[in-house]
Image (tube, rainbow, N blue to C red; front, side, top):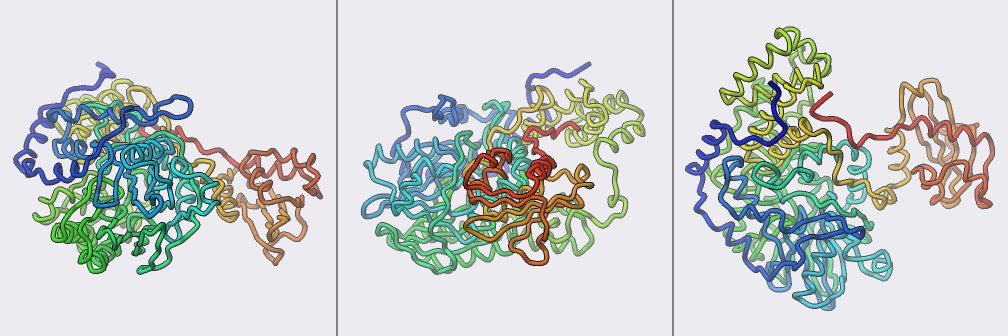
Length: 634
């Protein structure tokens, strides 16, 4: 009979597995709890942060249930981590250094200067950043923001900038500091593959899931993503080398560039006058991702480990506290060195051992099943796979060196999922027989196999209610047993969408500010990946843009490829179908779809020669990304 649509209790095998962890790890160790609450000054009186329309974008009280005992439907290690990450309010790190925690996925750090404050990593949304700054000012006075610093190019570290400063502030002299390459990576990640990443982020962070013991309890690195207004103010000062020193409002900073670690553009910061070290997102209280489940370029654990060694050598002898852009600080030099050394060792171990085993002929999935951390690292809470995991990080290292193909020719040209599913189900005796056997596997507690085999039935017949229900139930049980917050969210989101349908993308990062920050080259590239190739095979259209403040750019659509050539060299079309002279702002407006091409004819400051309809025809070959595409069904 068809399965129901409501959350189920934990099955006995999950209950036993979760209970076994209580004796395996040191749950009586209270050091992290003491550190997470150290320096607490207070929190906001209003627990709900709203946008201008009154819509809730963050709820400080949503995780109050974590104060209770861990239920059978949650991994007790993840419950512990989520409880620690859910503490919210203003915390003093050391004299003159404060953090707003629990107001978003990330922390906002505030360093007091001679006149105002330096704001580091202003969260995801302007609304949560503004609420965090207001909390600080309520305790420390109405100090102006004298500078902003982005530690790296992920949206949870810059998206809320307009909640703490304005364009006018920056134009008036408030600097915005960032690592070299920040703007390129910040905008490209959220535009080129932004739609797909955003949709998968809905699974990874579970922002649309109900909060509670059967639903979302955290994401390991923090609780979840806020859903407010994302913005970006481009940096005014770039950090280009390790050892570079900058002083802003009397605040001395010494920088360490760490490209290719947790982000393509990232840096650590030492504050010599505060004996404090900001590790950005390079050392947090969890094993981080080498390949985030939402999608990204594979990170390099080898250089990540080397930069952690460099940070130990450069800064720990003159630091009393290390803090990061997520979670809580570590105090004391001896503890800092141990923490950073273990963080280094976990990335180096995964890198080196994966390579050792792949050179013995093992594939990524085989290595992931065999990989175990050394006992000392496994016992350290901060190396647990709450966000990244040993399993998917190992596969990421394999992918970095070997790619998607495991070398077995049987895997070289497999049928795509829906077509393969139909064949599998037929070979296995039909959907009814598959489900009969899968129900027995479910009863046996083999939920991994249930989701693997029933997935074929769902993809062969997505309207099979019994298959969807059983798949949802099995995914749910895997979520209940997962120590990794993002795995739990992926499993539970899959169950939720199988039962209730797609939720779409709760957090949209390709905001107007990010689109405006694209270079012209990036903007043309962003258009090229939207071309309907087969639909434009017969098109041959050339459009020349004569930009009043720059070199001309010729766009040509031919062979299903949109190329853009700057200048008038041999690669540019000598006889375009239409030639348009206009300002760069007008060009951007047309390419982003804000202004239709026909509106250009009414402009006195725009010159057009040739057939303007060709531009409309070219733009008509651009498709629109789908932020609501299906994931757990074909």
